[in-house]
Length: 539
Length: 53
Image 1 (cartoon, rainbow over the protein chains, first blue to last red):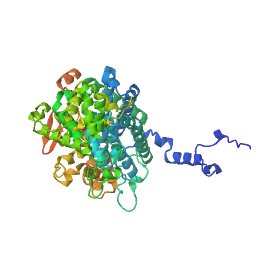
Image 2 (image 1 turned 45 degrees about the vertical axis):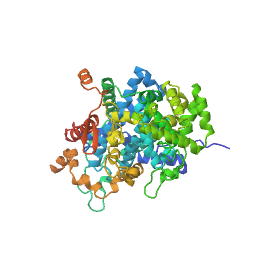
Image 3 (image 1 turned 60 degrees about the vertical axis):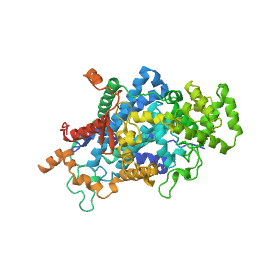
């Protein structure tokens, strides 16, 4: 077999009509260079109507993303515990935190600018669509980032967010209390997807060019069948150094990020341990443990994906995605939260209590625990020491022993590790903690609760996730704010469905009559392109 | 100036919140949203340097 030698240097970069054009590689190269010739990919000039500060917010968004990725790579290399224990680590975390704030800030301004320019005109719908998807993917990236902070905020966010994800079945596959899963999604999966979407968006911008003024460039847009906005620009150009623009944007964003980090650092409130909970709120701890034993706790009565319980879970009318996803993360609260950890206890009183518990029927166990639970509810301050006498079996001894174990710090390990050496899944300890009221009480103090628009808030006085305003808004108003009706009882599932529809509307906004015409009716574009309109009117 | 800002605005202290009907919003978030609107208006209104044609 003889190989055909092609004198590559003799051939033009783009050649059409040769037999080699049938090769996949040739086809791809032709497609690339036809759609994006180098002068369009890295232009040194652009239409003269591109003359407003609003245009710099796209490149500022890219610059902020670069700072996020750079600071995130340092954090990823050093590992998730570094920033809690090192001053340098905390500063890098601050860079990551503030660059995310700047990223969303400039991205929202960029988005507003593109909306008022009706930037989807002239076969640029995909540019809008890719930008809108990038915005939504960024919310996903930020959400997973908040989950993996491994501090109080991430503890609370995972305990709360699980309900929304579970209500539409997603939680069965993406377990927000599994820090290992969330971390890998945050540092590997989401950045890759986001980077691909952003590259797609930027290439579309370069391919189609910057949208011309509304009713321009020759005043014919919207008239007849010609889509003037889609035609190549033949008017005056101005010099445009795209590389210099990015370098300046990167410098500005980097300096701003460093300044904000140096000024205000970043939030990092310590996670609540079971020891802290048992010490600070022993009555709540004991009440929660007995609720786990009688099956009345939040987790025991949750339904999918943790417990197989008929009628439990949320639905959207007849659509029960939570139930259909199934019990994929099975949890047995009484056994996993109380009985198994007690078996690791060195407390001599435990073995007798456990033997009595093990020897009883399931019905008897629930009856003892329910009776104790009811008595706790009637005791002054819920104090286990002031419970009236009754037939509670070994439940008082078991819950008291579990309390002592937790207060000594010996429960955090067994409950979180579950008998394993390596482990990154904190589902059991987070569920147990969230079944009590202590975690929620601390969250309420920080204004993080769902009915406090808490999804938007950050611990301390730091800016939070303003971009979640619409999602959290629905939880504040009736009928969703009251669990007394079916809308409120199924609020998570219905609001997720509502947000899915609204997100789809946001992505497909160029196709929505009325909304897509708003930029034409409200003449913000007259301000953005005022120089161009002025020059056109003066000839 | 940076030191003044640092001591004047302590973000690690307890937050302040504004109640607007059923909505509670952190002052920090409100400032961020107000800044976004202000920056958008400035970006639209401020004259852009004329480039070489």
